[in-house]
Image (tube, rainbow, N blue to C red; front, side):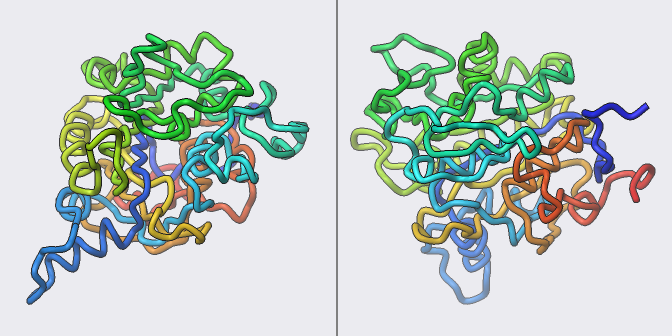
Length: 348
């Protein structure tokens, strides 16, 4: 018997565990174009190329060369990734003030919340809500989330409702920024006990990878401002950039790939929440690299995808209905080209 939470579309791969790693700022060209140029004949590799993500990891996975953002700002892309909600005027500014979405009415048919603002009403459905309802575990791992000595908070750090966001920019020794953490903008999450237990520091990733039964089905992993690939200062005199992001990825990605959970139906998607080099281009190409036992090594897929596509892919894989913009027929989930090594049984 088909239940309302069972999608009618079959997943292109039997994904059991997914890790989405979001950098912040690099465009497709900055990561993959410059790395390719550095490998080309007669070109000296003096440009700031991504040698690890753009070259080494890229050779191990399938590159989605036409994967685009849905906003020029970072926050709306992360919100879209876990909820299918589109940008609004305030989220497009990364929400410097932590204000409620108003009027905030949620359409019963589409699940889309109307109005302008940052804190979505409790009736707004998110991927974590769906996964909890389906008996699946989710987590967000955020580097430096516990680095604010004033608050002493080590998980689920967020501004006070209606207040200016004190974590909108990095501070010396504390590169955590609220707008890189989409979970806390949804009251269904931020006002639940799951926020404290599931929206945690990056230090929790390794213990959770040690045993498959401790590994969440869905994990969102975000570096702090020093390691997210952005070129701006990341607090004090420290500077990040793509090279710093590469070094950070070298410590994170192998630990996931070497886990039992990854070997048994795992998928890693590495993308960026926006392209800082194209501040006026809402649908800038940020690219996405898919690493999985089901993805061909060194392959490129040019199909048009975006963050809604990734959400739809995850929802179909986990057996829940696509929500928000991800539910529209125009949004395509990753197909058999992306998962070229997946078993064909059950596929259309």
